[in-house]
Image (cartoon, rainbow, N blue to C red; front, side):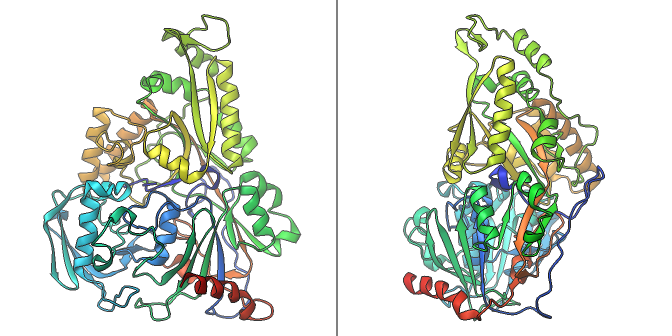
Length: 566
C-alpha cells in the first residue's frame, strides 16, 4: 500500500507490530495467552476483521494490506519471512544468489500443487513475473520491487527450478520475493488478466481455498485437507468480516462476533483495565514499522513549494494529538525512517507546531487576506483545499478536525472529505485528490525508492504525492545498490534529512498499535516489526478453544456458506 512501504492502510487501525520497546520509557505490552488446553487443536472458525474491503483477489494486483492479508491464505509466496523478518522457505525450498545479486536460482517445493490438483511449475513463476513486468497489468505495488527484472536472463531450468535475472543487484531484492505470490498459467494465462479473479473462483497454492466473497461484506476461506506444505494450519475456516467503523468493530469484538481487531487509542485506554472485558479479551499494545502521515499532491499548485508544505505542517499540533488523542501512546515523527530501523538519523528534527512561523511563511510568499473573509488568497485564488480521510476512523477524523482548526487560525480553509476505504485508495492511486491522511506499513528493508523516487509516479510506483528532488533521487539510487550496510546507513541518514526538509508528507505520528483478541484464540505471537500476521507461521499457528456445545454449532454457518458457493 507498498519496496519499503508496501501497503496503504487506514490510519485508525494503523499498521504492523514489533516487540521493540519505546525508547522513551513507555511500558509496552506483550501478549499473555490464556491457557485453555494443553496443546493446540485442529478445527473451528476464526472471525477476523477487515477494516477496509479488499479491492482484488489477484495477488499480482494487490494495493493494500487487506488484499495481501486475504491472499496470504490462498497463495504461498516464493519465500516467507519469519518472526525476526529473516527469509525462510515458502514455495521455494532453497535458493542461491549469484553474479553479485543479479541472478537468483530458486528450487520449488517438489510437492507443491494448485488447488485444482495440478503441480506448481517453474513456468508458473515465469508467467507471474511477466505479468508483473507488463505495464498493461498495472502491478503497481509489485512492479517497483521487480523494476530491474531482466526477462532475457529469466528462465525455467526444469519444472521445479527457476532462474530469475536482474539488470543490477539490489540490497533489498531478496525481501521482494516475499511479496511474489505465483499464480497458475494454465488458469490465468488466457482471457482478461485484470478481471480474471472477478468471478470469485481462485486457484491458488496456499493452505486455504476461497469459499466465497461478498464485496463490502465478507470473505470466507476454508482449509485444504490435503495441502502440500510442511505444516497444516489448525483452523478449518477463517471468516473475514468487513467492518470499516471502529465502534462497530469494537462492539462486535465485545460480544464475540469477531475474534480480533485493532481499536482506537481512546477505546483501548478506557477499556484495557475493565475486569469484565479482561476475562474475555486480551489487550495488547506494541510499536511497529509504521506511521501516519498527510500526503500532499505536489501536482496541485498549492503544494508544489516545499516552503508551503512546511508551513502547513507547522499548523499540525502533533504533541497535543499524542497527549489528548493517543493518551501518550504514540511518538512524534521526524521524517520517513523510524527509530527501529538502522537507517534512522537521530539528528533529524521534528517539525514543531508553530502557527506564528507558518503565518509568516504564507505572508512572505504573498498569501494575504485581501478581502477580509478570513481566508488568505493570492492572485485572486483563496488558499482552500480538501483533505481525504477514510470512513469509520474516529481518530482520523479527530486529527483532521484538529488540523482544520489550526489552519483556520492562519487563514487556510481545509475541507474534510470522508470516503469509504477502497474508494479512497483507488482515487489516491489515480492522483485524484489534493491532500490525504493515511498510514504506511513498512518493509523490513528501509528502501524508500517506490515512495519518493521521481520515476515512481503511479501506476508505476507508489509516489502518489508526485515528489521529485534530484538529490533525493540520487541518494535512493545509491542506497538500494549499496551492499555495505554501514555505507548504506550513511546514505539513508542523508536522505532522512532531505525528506524531512522537503516535507512531501507531513509526518504525523508513529502510533503504538492497540489490539484486542478473544481469549478463545491461542498461539498468538508477535514479530519484531510485523506483529501478529503476514510473517510465517503467524496466523497459521493460531487455534481456537472448543466452543460450548461442541464444534457442530460453530461450523454450521461455514458449511452453509461453502454449499452456497458451489
